[in-house]
Length: 326
Image 1 (spheres, rainbow, N blue to C red):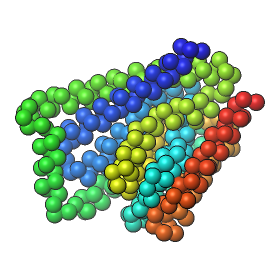
Image 2: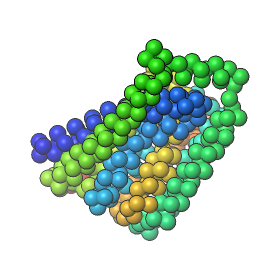
Image 3: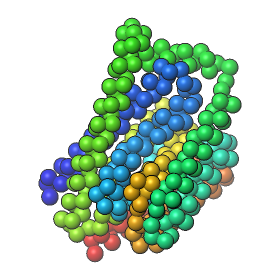
Image 4: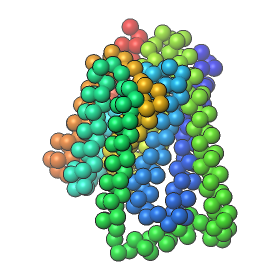
């Protein structure tokens, strides 16, 4: 039992470190290539913080541990809203941008509903996966168009400063490119290794304790792979950039379903546990829907709303633990 636990914890830590270096390297390479900072934020960073979930879900599906693969995705979405957004809004009330209510949140709610629909027959097959990936491409393209339309007059100067910072001109652009490429390569290697360790440990613990792999995926692994989102949201809130916390959660949930479930199902069709169809998917949809009245009423997520989200998350986790111990 000790070795599987060490594998799980060590794997999650490796995922966290690997994700950090991969995102850092990818962002700097994008800036060195003179891509707009707005485009970088909406694509590279949003996808980068979801890479640990992708690595774990692909690895688990390849091993036929599809309950872990699917549970990791659904559990991450629930954790993002219930725990991460809840904690961030307790620290500081989160203002809601008009664009979030008009576009980003409806997309998140739609893809949550889409998950319930595609999984209702007990299988997310390759056609479902391809459909989700196409939706991802459309979403990214739309966000890039919106970002370009919203570029301010000072964007050129801001981009210049970011490029200079990314390149660390004292070491020269060539060395900067080389260093960041190494960050990306090292990050990818770490994600693969971290996924291998964490899935091995999670499966072994589930078998030793007689706990469903679905529960391990929904709880320990989902929370572990969501650490990048947690760190991003808490840091942003502490720095009084709390609106980033909401965008991070909404964007991550969209990527979790469209990218992670889509790519995983395209490569390895994913059977869906009956309990996931009956309970887990609806809980994820319920958390997604609960955000609307919180955001619409006062254009902010208050501390009282945050406590409701946290209470809902604790209740769901308690339900899973109690069910596992029966």
